[in-house]
Length: 299
Image 1: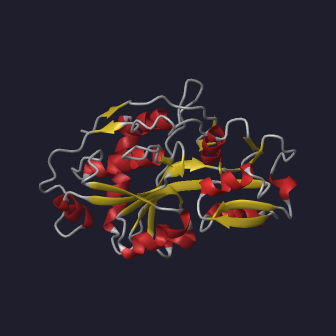
Image 2 (image 1 turned 180 degrees about the horizontal axis):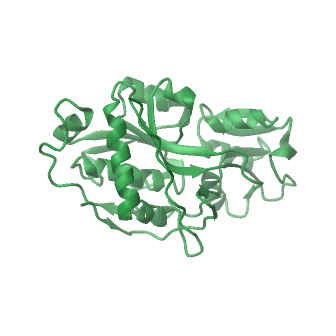
């Protein structure tokens, strides 16, 4: 049985129903978040020839995560392992393969930006992607996706002295988001002019220095960035999208789906998912949402 132990303080977060509306300082601590103990016996656990058996036998895995999203996937300077809710869910999957998720010789947490998640999975550069990866029909034509393990919504980040109150105030205006993200598509649908950047961190910097008037992505990401630019940036407006955050895997390895769903379902039931949430996105005034319903795997 995996066991979770808290290693960091959490942050501010507003939660409405099962939808996340934001996070705070998670990731700033940089102490590795939650410790997860690996399963100790994988002999015969997985069918021979499956990708799970191959990974367990190899004792190593490559996991794509973000490095610039406090609370979700964030690599602090001087740290060996990124922190955040995405990373904690990744640890549960890694541990189920009898691989120590804290062993950086066995686990490569590869920085994976929005624009290269599908290419990395298609090329085999990473085995899994947990990088604020919204589940969409279009992406499922290219890679496998299952979950969701979190549901969140898109908001706006603007300078602290901005008069912008919502995406409706930005029609015809430039709004930055990460290239290859669904956030960029949603900005254009709302009548703003989506401007791609390589990372969300670059967008936040562009907003702070006045290059663009606003950026947009999941509220959970934006509040983490606002905390980094304390007093300079603020999150405004209601959510104008629903993002179902899931796990990506190779479309050539459909066996992954049932395994991932099984680990997620177990974490919902035994409290590991809630513990991971509290350690990264939770806080004293935060109500932990109900775990989302998992999608069924395609036959």
